[in-house]
Length: 137
Image (cartoon, rainbow, N blue to C red):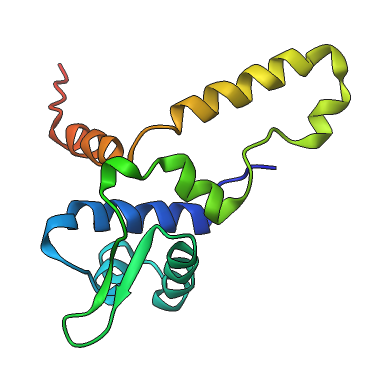
């Protein structure tokens, strides 16, 4: 079953930060953890998993840290979440009602297609959402 836990949320958050910093070199875990109130030790475990999956690379030394292993356009949101959370699939329990199987299949496809966006697109959406002005009368 595809459930987005704190692991997925923290991992995706870290990846958006690494994406924003892509041209400037690695970021230290401490910076990301403090910025988003993520437990540093847990973030280390998540970044190790992302490194094993080929999405980030690590650098040693005083200027070391983590950076994306490839450009943000080449990393899809679904790649990050699948690596951290597992395969996208609607709860197997809901599959028991075969009359609704078409519905669950369509739902999986819709979610999957939405998550196909690149990390660069997600970062752009984040930036756009921050710059929107809301008026209230």
